[in-house]
Amino acid sequence: MDLVESYAEDLSFARKRVTRVLLGLVGAACVVLPWIAAEYVVFIATLIALYSIGVMGQNILIGYTGQISFGQAGFLAIGAFAFGHARGWGAPFLLALAAAGVAAALAGVVVGFPSLRLKGPYLAIATLGFGVAVYQIFVNWETLSGGRAGLAIPKLQSILGLPAATSTYYVYVLLLAAFTLATSNLVSSYVGRALIAIRDSDIAAEVNGVNLTRYKLLAFGVSSFYTGVHGALYAQVLGHIEPQIFNILESITLFVAVIIGGIASIEGSILGAAFVLLVPKVFADFREMVPVVYGVVILIVLIFEPLGLYGRWLKTRLYFQLWPFR
Image (cartoon, rainbow, N blue to C red; front, side, top):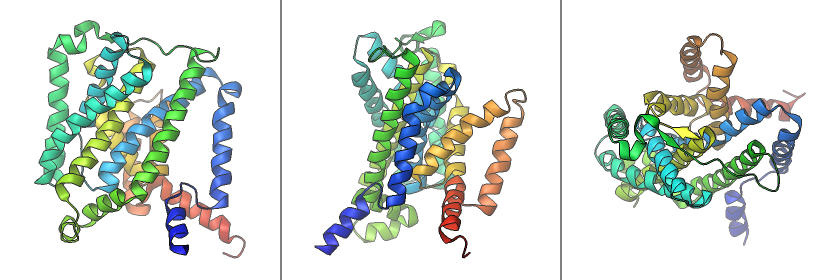
């Protein structure tokens, strides 16, 4: 019985009382934010929520499975345009969102087949080629992308009489909470342990009964589903999309968010998403400094804090737990 309770506790999202209190405070802050903050701040928070979902998916692939991918811009585009067409045909928001995720997931499974034989930089180059190919398809196939005019996305309607921006914010925060809970359950389950085993040593994992084909394709599919949802939510916020939005810089941005936020960390995914969105705002008058800041911070993380911002948060929390006896 103790073993069962211990395992159930291990699978729970928040195992400690302090964690539950912190989650409660964060939840309360998210609820009151639209009522006390400026509209621009609410918009930034909305972007952080949708980017966190995409970074979380990238972290499942890179952090938990050890498969490096630079093709996320392609999955973003597939999700965004699938969502746009579904909404244009009159599909409800959630149904169009699911369709976008499924379309990106199917593409992810196809792209995942090279991962069965390619590793490291070779896999990264293969996925990069996929991203470039998808970009060229949407640029040259006007039926899919809407041509030079792009594709218009119907705005999300007001909910419970709230302003449209506030309604969008709450919907996105709830979606982030759902994906965070799902990711936590995934990485704590047998599937998550299998992915981690593949990351650490695929040969040892296979010897111990892990089906490499199944779980590598599953990792690509799940990661691409998250990215497709990210693309759909981004399209909804923009209200209008065109292929030029989904270039290689989007893939690099997601990769930077994973490294700086913290590899194999759910909290790090959210911190990384906040970082890559806030830095361009801080350096709005010096846009050329943004890549420099990214590069310098990545070097600092790799040298001094391999666990990224999440690792720094862990050390800070440990310090206050031991204070003043440290």
